[in-house]
Structure formats: C-alpha cells, structure tokens
Amino acid sequence: MKEQKYKIENIDSFELADIFDCGQCFRWNKQNDGSYTGVFKNNVLNVQKQGDTAIFKGICNGDIEETVRDYFDLDRDYEDIKKQLSKIDENVKTSVEYGKGIRILNQDLWETIISFIISANNNIPRIKGIIERLSKAYGKEIDWNGNKYYTFPTAEELKDVSVEDFRKLGTGFRDIRLYETTHMILDGKVNLEQLQNNPNTIEVREQLLSLSGVGPKVADCILLFSTLKRFEVFPIDVWVRRVMNELYIKNPDENKVNKKEIEKLAKEKFGNLAGIAQQYLFYWKREA
Image (cartoon, rainbow, N blue to C red; front, side, top):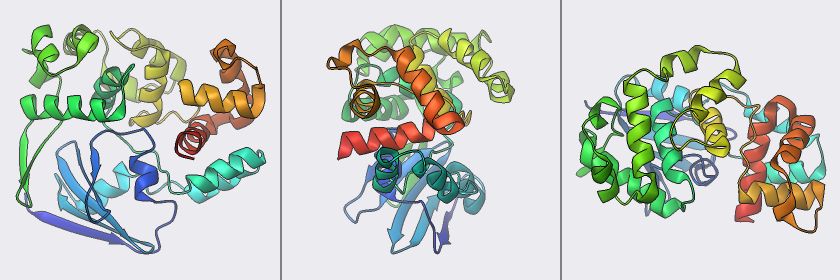
C-alpha cells in the first residue's frame, strides 16, 4: 500500500483534541507537532489541522477520501446538531462551545466491544497500553514513515489466545471476559453483522449485555461510539453522573443519584441527540 493524502479546506466542527481526547477512542496519539497519528481497521493515518484546513495522510486500505469521510462522520451536519442542542439551556450551550470540534467516530464494532471491555474500571493511559500490546502481539504489522504500527486483531486472530495470554498483556480481571467474549463471537452466539443491521436499539443493547464483561455503561459506549451509531443512548460514568447532578438533579450526595433518573432526564432534555449531548457535557466537565 502506498501513502495517500487528502486535504479538506474550511472544515467545521473538527478539532483534533476534541475528537481524540474526549474518551471515545484509544488508538490515536498526539505527535510533537500537534498532529495525531492513529490506527483503525487496516489504516494508519496522521491528521493535522492548519487554520481551518485538515490534512490527512498515511496508508489506507482503499481510497483515502472515502475512508476519512466515513470514519470521521464528515457527511453529518454537526453545525445543525450544535444549534439544536444549544437551544436546550445555557449549560448545554456552554458545553457545546467548549467541545465545538467533537465528532463521533465510526469505529469498527468488534474493536469497540473489546476496547470498552478493557476500559471498565480503568484509566486512559492504561487502556491504551493494553490495546497497543494486544495489537502488537496478535494484529498485523504495517510499516509507514519509518515506524511500525499494528492493526487491532480480529476475533479470528484471537481464537487461540488463552486466558493466561490475555493476562500477560496486563488486562487484569478482564482476561477471562476478553476470552469469553471472543469465543461468543467466534461461536456465533452474538452475530455482529446482525447487530449492525438491527434498527431496534433495545434488542441490540440486550445482545451486547449478553457478552462477557459488557455492563450497561459499556454497552451504551459501544452503541454510541461504534458503527452502530445510536445517538439516543446516554452512557453514564462518574463524570456524567456528576455533571447531571450538579446542573439538574442537585442531590447533596451525588452517589445517591439513580442511573434511571439520569437516563429519564437525558431522554426528556436531549431526545435522540442524548449521546452527543453526553459527549459535550462529559468533555466539558472533565477537561474544564
């Protein structure tokens, strides 16, 4: 594969830190020049922003323009989404302005499932380290620009990996969960293609919850951040609980705030854009 390049001028709703540091992805790393380099599917890309121009270059398994437009969800009107959300209240408006460059990526479903199982009770540097070691051990090597990169391993590439092998990568208590989920997919107990084609979010969520290591928050992250693209879900972690309590619920003890209460409130306030609202609120609260 030879290097390709693609440039978009006057790009809106596209800021590198907002996209790559908002908690939705784990294989993008900031470079010394402020650009980011990442691996997804069989692609290695570097993305830089110069003024309002985005420049993409790297190794692509296919046409770089098609790959970029799909992965970065560039055909969706985020300016319109931000206008709709900003009308809700001043808090949402402030969070939208803070994270104005966020876009929800179209990440591979299988990779998103495994990545978010790894993310449970974990921090981002550690999650990134585990995923990198997993990819280096079992993925395919891609040479580009004098560096070696590794694709995220497919379920097939992990079929002979034992619980002990997963443990050696530093996965901790998640080792058995990664093993079991890999084999549930390989044995067809959960069919990823069927999930992809099922428009019923509740049914898809139930299927995801049947996977080992997937609880409600992880299931919602998979629904939102993968190619499933269900914007109506509202993943709730400690930051989201905190921001929803501080802004709207106002319980003196945030630990007593019920997830069902938060979900109900999110549905009423944000409707089918709840997941995107969650990203703006989460990123604003955590970073600012």
